[in-house]
Amino acid sequence: MAGPMGGHGRMGGRGGYPMTKEKADKKALMKIVVYGKRYLPAIMVAVVCAIGGAVTTIIGPDYISELTNTMSRGLMTGIDMDEIMRICITLGIIYITGVILNYIQQFITATVTQYTSKRLRTDIDKKINKLPLRFFDSSTKGDILSRVTNDVDTISQTLSQSIASLVSSIALFFGVLFMMFKTNVVLSIITIITSFIGFIFMGAILKKSQKYFNAKQQCLGEMNGQVEEVYTNHNIVKAFGGQPGEVKKFEETNEKLYSNNWRSQFLSGMMMPVMGFVGNLAYAMIFIIGVLFINSGNDAVTLGTIMAFVIYARLFTQPLQNFSQSMTSFQQASAASKRVFEMLESEDMPDESGLSKKLSGVKGNVEFRNVKFGYLKDKTIIHNFSAKLTSGQKVAIVGPTGAGKTTMVNLLMKFYDVDEGDILIDDCSIKEMKREEVHDLFDMILQDTWLFSGTIRDNLVYNKENVSDDELNRAVKAVGLKHFIDTLPNGYDTELNEALNLSEGQKQQLTIARAIIKDAPLLILDEATSSVDTRTELVIQRAMDDLTKGRTSFVIAHRLSTIKNADVILVMRDGDIVEVGNHEELLLKNGFYAELYKAQFAK
Image 1 (cartoon, rainbow, N blue to C red):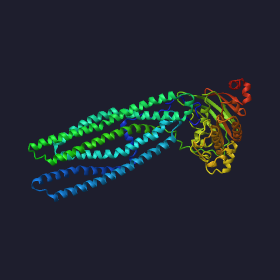
Image 2 (cartoon, helix red, strand yellow; image 1 turned 135 degrees about the horizontal axis):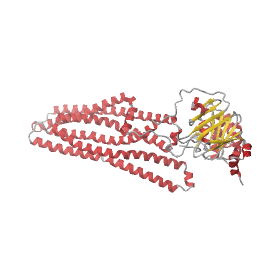
Image 3 (cartoon, rainbow, N blue to C red; image 1 turned 135 degrees about the vertical axis):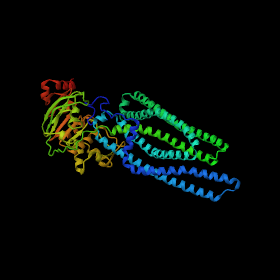
Image 4 (cartoon, rainbow, N blue to C red; image 1 turned 90 degrees about the vertical axis):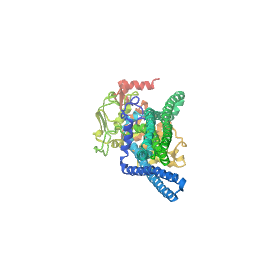
């Protein structure tokens, strides 16, 4: 994500910001559990309902066994219908109770998971505003968007679909285990042995597939980043014929995503067939051993016992199958939660709650005092910057690309903190002021325009209240946009969308009008007229001349013709000020500034 001042003097590449160390998969899931601990009372109620629902499921086969034995005894002597009705009514009450308890459990679980997901998104939104720009320097916008959307959605789906199933499965598993041993020990051991075989296969599958789930989420973030970059800069890609390279890059990432996704889904998909095979094996063993018991004359096993055990075997393997499905979802949630909590646990900007210094009646005196700074601690790019500027001066900062021009303005606005030295506004250190207080002192007009979805009025009065139409008219008239807005069907209330095809120059005029309306005591212009034609530039230049009157303004300039009237020109090279003076003085020195100027205007 580009910093607030574009690409000048930025840190190279990505990875400059140290991300939080990746946690183990189990720890990542535990973070979700801890995160939702405030809902523990509701979860406990859901657990009790799950256990109650499991109990109704477990005791049902016992009554079915009794019903089977009653019917088998009456085949020769006559069936006792009163007893049959009693057992059926009891079964009906048991199963209806189970349905009610399961509904309550599902309702509570769904509510808790949605509240947790909502809170997670809210915390991420708050966290984004606390992260330093270094974080965004080390991540693509697409990857950050993937964390906020895809990864949170994955966690939400897992919580809503798997938690309830897991709780019920655990309760059902232990309840069935108890009832099986209560009914017949030998048949219980046979059922457990066959199920244990399934556990061995499932453990091996889980261990193998987890790395593919992690790689899948990582590739998804990379793909979102690539797609966002290509579509945002679609015209550049087309103009430079970069489609084949971008398509190849996308196909490589897409192939990696396909490979990891296919392998993870294939391995996790093996769990259900394996557990189904184990369940069928258990049925066969129960019938074979049960028939052998009956043929041997063992009264401990009856036809009803076999019927009950077939149901118990199905109930015993059912939680194992649910457990395997839940593990697949938890693997995806584990990979997603690692990425989400990497973001939530990243280092915030320094806490400024103890700062209370506020400036009123700002004059606009600015001093850079022995400033040193580097985007990376071991790579200083501003070595020893000092300058003292008085109120109302128009200060131009010039120099070759990478000299540190924009970096100085980023430091001035406290987008980054200086490593050494200090910056003072009206003799007050910005270290003693909150970032928001510093930002309020500045108007900023950048080379890259920034407009958001909404009306023209919304964009002009952004974050400012009680702005009258007269103020809007004066601002847009100053930048030469009044006639254009008057021709629109809804005037200031016209929606900015694709149907309203604004030129880059018109977008820039709107951003300059927005700065006029804010009317801050300090002004920053970063090559603000680079996107407009010559005629419009003259109109905007007059508007900016009026805007700079009576306030300290900093102009980052590449076209030196635009800063001839600057009161002070700071010439930078390699992070240091090498020359200071006005246009005529610097030309007379015949130094570095004169070289730059002659290079631009040489015949």
